[in-house]
Image (cartoon, rainbow, N blue to C red; front, top):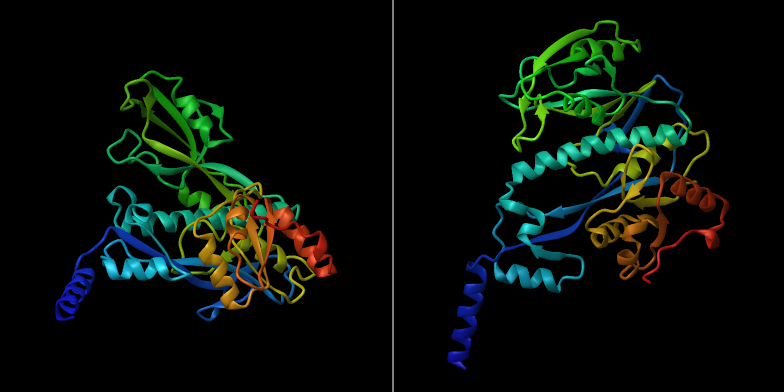
Length: 355
């Protein structure tokens, strides 16, 4: 008995002291996109008539251990046994030795992009036009473009050829040979921002000539920028939410915007949660941690959960009691399902199945 007890004590001590290469995911908080966070509305719209909302359209989150946290064997075993938690290899959350700071920065960028796409998708669903333009997204350090182009500059043309998509910029630049000059017609970022604020078309343009360099692969001309897309909205939409990252709240932000701009309530007072990325055209994409988001939603009181189509099979295999999963592939699917809920046509809802 004494020997067995000593062995058990030694094993427990070892389990506590020995780190293992795992991390833990668990249900995070949910936030009502129609409500407030830290005393201010999550969604604020000015310059356009809005309407009262009720009920919930909650975005869901997953809580993860930090990159620097060293999980021990006892915690790993407990996490494996706990129904609501998931223990995964550390590299799954922080691949290639990525630090927590790097991961947070990447998540913040994805979150910012998801907000823009949510706005575009929401207004598209309502038939409200949004203007898009090609901008300088980033400038590579020590590249030919450094000091000549800046993030936020609007690119009107390259070598006199009008550009309408980010890919048009690279297409025109690569028509040159390394060492040749290429001419950019731009609206400087400052002037573009001032014109957008005043809801006017920018009038100041500049021509910038840059001598191209050779790509690392040695097969094409480059100037050292990454082109991107910026949108000009006909009124102001602000999303005020801190300490959240990643792209998975896009669908719920978009629905919240639609609800505030629609006379009729989308929720009819019901508690609806959901998740899913969204692109500018309203396409809903899959996310990670669906099981934990379902648990978090149900714990918060959700009755229905808007589920990306590609997550349906996984979600349906372990759905919390009392939570109905609604399959969505686009924002239009979501609004039509919410309309069915308002009318009480629950039998016709597109539901998730485990098959």
